[in-house]
Image (cartoon, rainbow, N blue to C red):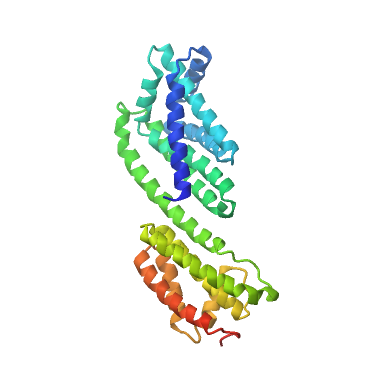
Length: 325
């Protein structure tokens, strides 16, 4: 499980626990009851789409506050406690235990579409704080939040118009499945960006070249070993990422020996293209490996990148000192 997925799960579990605890505490508050009744009455007689938009606008505002690194955790806790307290106050006024209402609320079809979005928003902001060099993953993960909240709002708004709210699980179930696969897709996109940035592609001066090529070659071997370790543990996602970073390190080492300055991945692509004049199969293997990585086809990716590494390692070890033309 990815670190950001663990954060999401942690915040989601905490969210549920806080909600249940806060709703279980009996609260006698006419102001909270009036607040709830005012909100409900203001939207009850509105058209379906306006109800959905009203719900969405309120929820997205909360989620964006949850996204703020560090502070967002406090906003998440506050909003969940406040929701639990309002529910408790309304149920207490009707002589119903708040915890019972909370448990029933969690079974409604919109709940498990809406509630994870706040955990995702909070986890995204927290991830940026904890792993600043992977900030792009936090931003990309946040993309799912407005989509998830809008779909949840559509489902929740429909509950005002159906006699049996549980029938809307027909909509919620495929939405949850779709969101799961969309989340996985976003993480794969993030993997590609993080793989490039984590390879530490920094501007290299001529004076640094000959002292750094061996460092990059050692990083290549270290990352390859880490990839094999992840593979043995069944973690093919991390194995694939480390294999790719390993190849980037090896290309960087060769670039230094070829005295080819580089600043971006595109510069390293040009190293491959230059080498391909003498090793025609090199560019094909490089493109195949990248394509298989995008497709998350580990077996074919591993086969292509192993052949690629063998050729590149041979090139490096022959100590190329000039451009190959």
